Image 1: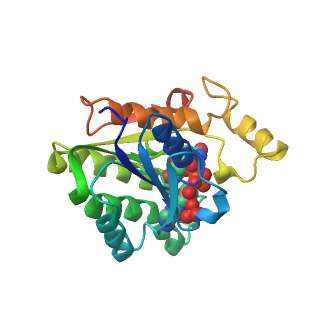
Image 2: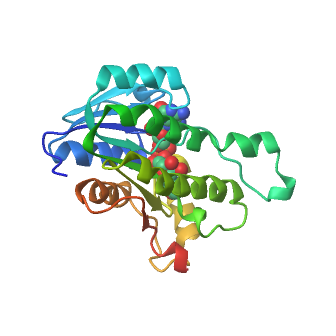
Length: 234
Ligand SMILES: NC(=O)c1ccc[n+]([C@@H]2O[C@H](COP(=O)([O-])OP(=O)(O)OC[C@H]3O[C@@H](n4cnc5c(N)ncnc54)[C@H](OP(=O)(O)O)[C@@H]3O)[C@@H](O)[C@H]2O)c1
């Protein structure tokens, strides 16, 4: 797909990977609406990007938003949805574990209600995470949710054709998910990635460039692209 002149909606588009994707889409000439629960935290949007408020867990709000913004060509969701549980499964509070699936419910809401307003040659990109296929200790919730996201996209790709859907699976990317951008965060991310094949955290732009690839390449659907510094092999 040629991005120039297209309309894109990016959920979770006010921070981190989603914000980088929104800005890259806008730089390529798309008209971008970037959404989150509270875009005011993000400051002013860049050129060709409009910030709007929407909670991906709220199906009614999403339906109204899609009706107002449609038709569009590109749908991206990088919205984390809510808090994710960490720690060993056998000690885990099950309400907290189940609440981790807010990310999946947000993504599936976006696909369920957004696809009907998406152009026939349109593209959807979701974001899973490296623990989906190689979880480290304490990451069972991340693994469960990420695996579900990837299976969902693979399976629903048949139903939504000729529209396309793909997933980007990041490793550790330096975003607000790990707190404010300061020396402490840099030290923690360096420690978390020191045994990876590429021993550093990725940047939001590195993850977002895979989102752009999946939008632009019309021959790719139902798959997952890893942008993880070699996490899966480390
Ligand atoms: N960073 C990493 O290392 C990493 C690794 C693997 C996977 N991922 C995945 O990559 C995606 C993006 O993560 P990130 O690191 O870029 O996170 P981030 O910087 O914290 O950004 C998350 C975005 O999601 C929005 N959001 C959260 N809950 C929402 C909701 N219920 N409705 C609408 N918007 C919501 C946030 O804005 P509001 O708070 O204003 O709603 C924000 O714009 C996530 O799915 C994450 O799980 C990240």
